[in-house]
Image (cartoon, rainbow, N blue to C red):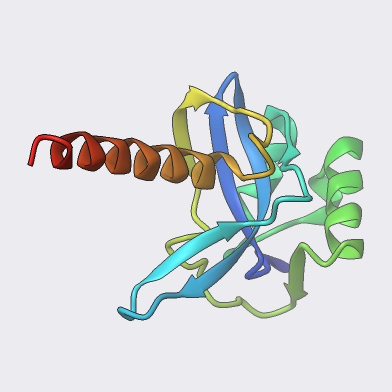
Amino acid sequence: MYYRLNDGYVLRGWKGLPYAIESCTILNTNSGSRMLHYTINRKPYFLNAEQYELVRSFDGETPVDENKLTALQKELLDRSLKENIISVSKQPLSKLSQFQRYIYYPAMYVKRLYGRSPVNATIAADIASFLRRMAYIRSFR
């Protein structure tokens, strides 16, 4: 059987928590580019190395032999199917999008900050810092 991560999920990792499946939405911007918007009310599904060994094969192209899975991997597979995190087929499925592929962040995972996702909180902090600098520069005119 072939399994593929559904479009609303991405593979991520952080320092200290290297394996996770995170819920998100891919948004199209006005300029035609695409960006991720992380779902605020859902925390990532953190995985151990044994579970991640199975999740790596959720690329739509790698066949999974269910008879060779451990009990923990079978439980993860059942839960992922039940919660509609993955799709299943007897034939190979399409590849993961570039957004869905595994990305490791060298920083530690920070639980939602002020109701924002870690990425959005970082962007908001950068924008606030930029606006403060612009206000400071304008004060000399």
